[in-house]
Length: 254
Ligand code: SF4
Image (tube, rainbow, N blue to C red; front, top):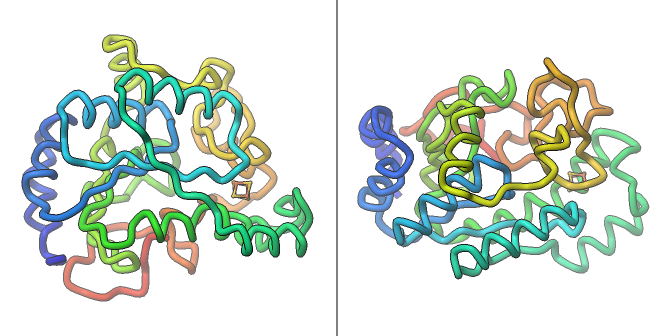
């Protein structure tokens, strides 16, 4: 994949709406493109745009085995709504057995290292299989979800996975996305109405209080202001703050 593509594509995407952004991404990037959904409200809007436009973009997810029942229900409802399968990657059985043997079934509460080890087995390794051989990776990241995401670019070359990473709702406001889901009757997670704005694994997600940032309910027992699951930050814990199209920078998204 030509790493200069983000320099060309980013400015062309910026003035467009979501539908046109996704359409242009599909036209501009050759090869296979995947959208990784975790069934958040912004993910549901992206999924709606891909499916209703009939774009050749695979909508995929990661089933960590620890998701909320409401998330599984939404997954099924979404497949029924669009008559499309959303393929999942699962943790490797041997690695998962070793993890639980070593740290216990809820061992991720014991330390940040234990939590990251769990995220690695249940999320990061499956993601690497979902992205194998892929040219473009679309996400539902939004800049105002947290301070750590505020400077993530619209398009960047991800040196770790060797893909063009596109965040087509990066500059969207949550209220605009919610309004769009209502306008188009897009199914959303029931937990959003109960104060769960950012929804991940059940044992690691809680509802948030008014005034907290959206991701405050994720790994709430950790104090680090750059809390991430490992899918979008580097091994050094740093979020990429701008495109690095021409270098094999060690600072990567996970
Ligand atoms: S969010 Fe929690 S349960 Fe899910 S993979 Fe990470 S540590 Fe494990």
